[in-house]
Length: 310
Image 1 (cartoon, one colour):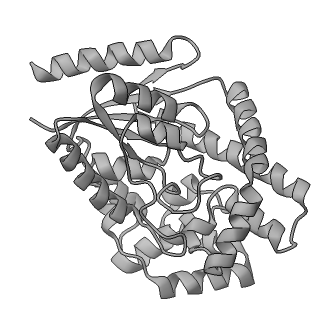
Image 2 (tube, one colour):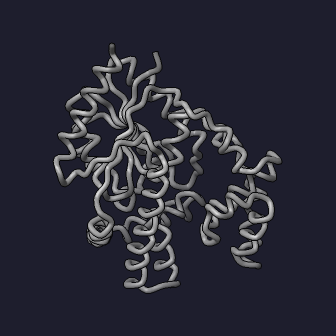
């Protein structure tokens, strides 16, 4: 039998952490964070890490495992997360993957070969320099010529993903689209996928409120302290929502009001793309936490565990 695992996914600010902790407490589970920015130590406020009281309610894994000045890849996450699954199951507990980084969820649940394609820092530096000199649309034009399907999926302004797609092609000679098509359809785990969803208007209001709270709690001071300590963040950490905008503010490129509004806007756009990504997965059972969602999730997990054990 394949190992059993529960995945709790959905867009940012929707209530995944709360549901994950509830399920962990009721079913003897431990949580594996599938958030690409919560892996970084010191990046606490802007990544909405679980509070100390929440961390005490259920064991958490894959939080604070990297320094913000080092790179952290999907391949590294896969290795650490699968080790965590084995350890959790070895203790007789239920692994719960909780997070909104769709790529991380995918590489954990499936043998996703793309995660193993290495990075080429020299190539990345050249492409980034070209983007600065010629504009981002120049790189996106290269992608349109080499991998039209990926170019349609990736917005020209999403420089990080454009560069990764070009990097994959130049290193392997195969497009990212081809790599994606070769991903196995069946998970290596017996997985129950729960998606947390609320109407978009309410989600956007939650996001705006969360950003205001983050700023009040000291997001700007947190970023300033990280820059003072490390000089700069890694290219991946620097792209974290909230951090990249605050860095622009601290460098005098934008004022405080614009910084805060950009964080809200970019987070709303990110949530929209997250939901679009997860909606493509027909195996996800969607729940609304405002309408008895926790109870619905508990019933679903209980039935699934009973069926899986037969």
